[in-house]
Image 1 (cartoon, rainbow, N blue to C red):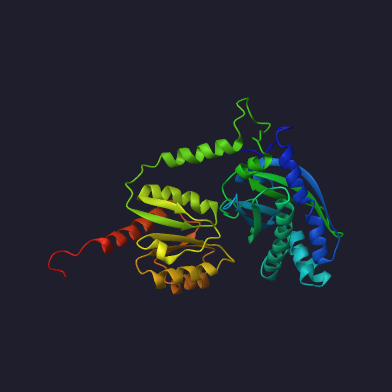
Image 2: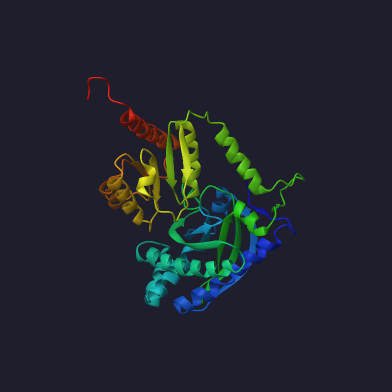
Length: 360
């Protein structure tokens, strides 16, 4: 779909909330990097992934925040054009101005600039959390990871797959040219914060909310998969909603009863004997390798599957050392995950079978 504007009068509460978030960006970043940063709220739109990528003015750095409590498993996105991300990262590291200018000109976003941008994201989301907790009950958000998106990058997973409500802003870092950034949240969360359905200018009179339509689409997709007889339990400790959505489909196909645990919950090995435990491990969540190792040390009958975001060689090595029973890179194909779960479930059932007569 193309980007669509929100129908006037249906977004009042949400607009106020997101505008208060955007209004903190300039002051927060200015105090952090020691330069004047001007940020002016712009417009609010509904995007799907394709229209968002198409609307980007150029390569953009993404700081992804993980929301918690009432919206656990959801994400908040902050996108800033690469030249400004590079400038602010360099200023944070006290890089000389001439080097920053060279990096802006080259358009590269890598190495220490990416790491420094992650630190900027940590401070940004800390500020967002403080503002939003005053407006929304039982809410928290923290920096999760960072990345780079380009207009042609349709395979990127950092933007997720859900439609987003975005609030764009104009940004100027010191004397640099003005750029465009945005903050985005998923439609379901947007309607919850809005305390009512959000309608777009593209609505045809039925006025079914965009979030409801998205959920209907997801549910229809799930119902189209034949439900296999339940043969076991899978305990999921996942952060990314994309992982959970695919996991629901795979469990239905394979015959696993899916039990979802909170993103901050630590697995109790004693509670998952003879079960499958699935952990996704995004960057900056390396502690989850330790969770896997502890489960395997204390419960030999538990099978652990690890889904590695950005599956580099060091991370795969960590996964092997944590004694995981199965390791997959993410994103992966749903069929690949289903086959792996089928294999793991078969191993568990074989162990549960009583020995044949004469084998004892």
